[in-house]
Amino acid sequence: MVEVSVSILSVQQENAIRTFYNLEEAKVNYFHIDVMDGKFVEQDTSSIMREYTEYLKQITNVPLDVHLMVEDVEAYIQSYSAMEPNSITFHLESAKNREDVLKWIHLIRDFGIKVGISIKPNTKVEEIIPYLPYINVCLVMSVEPGYGGQTFQEEAISKIEELKEYRDREQLDFLIEVDGGIDEETVSLVKKAGCDIVVAGTYILQAKDKKEAVAILKKE
Ligand code: DX5
Ligand code: ZN
Image 1 (cartoon, rainbow, N blue to C red):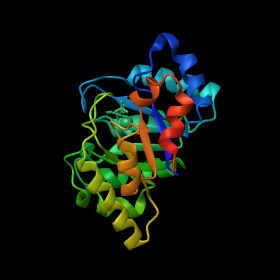
Image 2 (cartoon, rainbow, N blue to C red):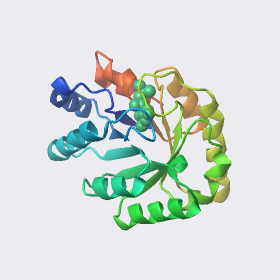
Image 3 (cartoon, rainbow, N blue to C red):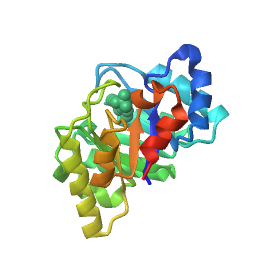
């Protein structure tokens, strides 16, 4: 059964408290925190995501799945480590070189937090292969990072299949997570391809019955 990580990017501030409560009631497995710095991507969500994360830390035990879409990865790892998230995921494309990637992996691991690396739609799986033995989650973007509500890009499916094949062949144990445009249709495509965790924002947040929407995504 896949796990569901709900993106809180589009949660409206005026009813955030109620929404977080409903999402926990809906049995999401993680809160997906979309941290954007206005440089790596156009939007800057850093302060609102910080506010939401501080609030979530106080009111729920649902684990936090932090997705950094930022240039200064090290600074955001430092600041989000204090929130004791379940995982911190950075973008491979944020790194200037291999040393950056290894440094960030070790920094997150030294905090005892699970390490994720995300790849954009145009980044090939072969570019992340060297790091797969050292990470806990590979986040495959099925949309260009930067906004919620975009259309699922089918090219993500073959990347999930490729990662699963490689993982099974090399007997590695990283999880495959997919992020962007996930709804009741696209979720069956990515499940079949072998993903372990799906991120969904719009599909869940717009659902009248959030519990049912989460159950539909989890359904075997
Ligand atoms: C996009 C974010 C995604 C997005 C998912 O940059 O990383 O997590 O918010 O939202 P939906 O499910 O609406 O595509
Ligand atoms: Zn995300």
